[in-house]
Length: 230
Image (cartoon, rainbow, N blue to C red; front, top):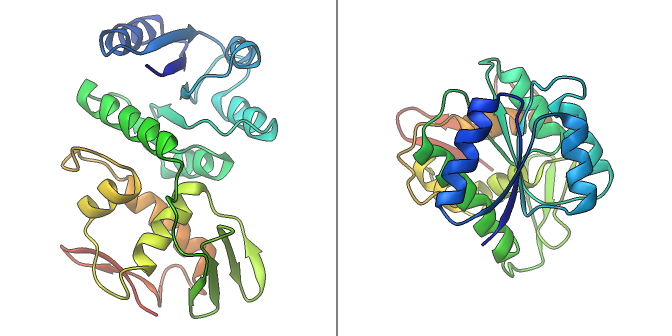
């Protein structure tokens, strides 16, 4: 089974995470501080990192920056006790793959762990055609996984790119949150209550729309989901 590193300073929560993940058959290592977590990664990189953002000393944001700067691409699931979207968005910008907000259920955590590990094992794109698609002033290259707006490269996180492509390939059709959670994040139980799709779409609008508050392409369809209008 996969090797998971948990970096969490709350001893009770860390113990609970270790117990749950151990029971599921994962190999688990726990670190209580950011620097200790980095030492563990340098010694033996995990296949998944569960990272608390609010750590003593070196914060979770600092840890995430350092591992991405070092070239590590294993998935990172961030834990946050804050409700502000800004913390989650900053985590995604730095390189996080998904998040859960404390308190969270065991079922929710395990679903996200399985989804992240499954996508890593599948190698991401799975052989899509190497061509370019686009909308408005945006061009998207499947083969190089790059996005340009008005000719300038726009940096997207891996999940932002996957979400954008999932909407593009529907040719204007509506995608529900549940469909996107299954397709992009690989959730087996898409009924889990999460704002993951909403947060990622908000970031796509910020990066790709002329006016994110009045989007022309990345549209919300009330009580149905989202669609991309060419």
